[in-house]
Length: 297
Image 1 (cartoon, rainbow, N blue to C red):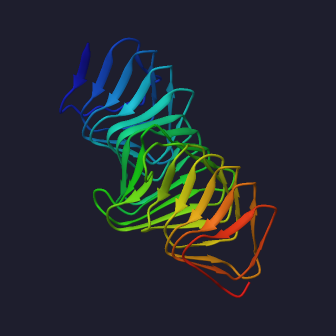
Image 2 (image 1 turned 45 degrees about the horizontal axis):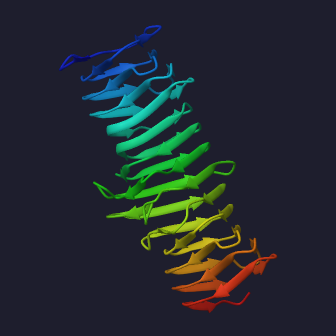
Image 3 (image 1 turned 120 degrees about the horizontal axis):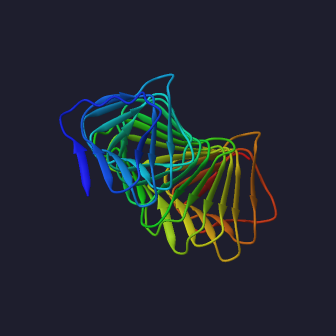
């Protein structure tokens, strides 16, 4: 059974909101600094209005059920922590805070201005719109899996940036052909940590998404096609039978910095222009299978 607050402002500063069975849908606006807990099979939904987790506050989620955004707009300006799940299943997640709990994003938006940081295990399993001038910094483990994808610029454009920080891990295991895609605005994807492509078939980073690698890119299965422009000072590795393609745009290996490639698969230029202005080294293969190879390195 579903129970809800409709058009009623709800503020939680208490020790806990506990949902042991069913679904509690909080559909009005409010401010939270307290704890939310949902037992296995139960859910507590933020279903409408504008909900604010205030700057300096810590909101704890616990239990094996889900505390989730399903409608309206939720601002995380403080910290969300705990052993529970803080999910996005609709509506809009925004703010400038930190989410340390685990999170599954199956639908809805990550939008608005400022920087939102995730430190736990995050899963993108559906279409997630990413727009409005947002920066998302992953310091934990972010997996774009299932048939999920991140849709830059939908629905409000803007200059949007996804950063996989040093020490972070981003796994691309989605069956979608373009799990990092764009419809409007400006998009940048920075990898300073570890990016893993682990799924069979060919999957692309869209040609209008700039991709910069100062970390490590591992392709253990299939083909990752990086079709946009960018600058590289990091490492690329492709396992046997796998490939990492530079498929379009203008890619630059900066002068004086080693761009390493390892593995028994192929790191290869298949389109666009790649400038090698630094040093490419390692035990793997750097192939020219299309496009243009230039530079002074």
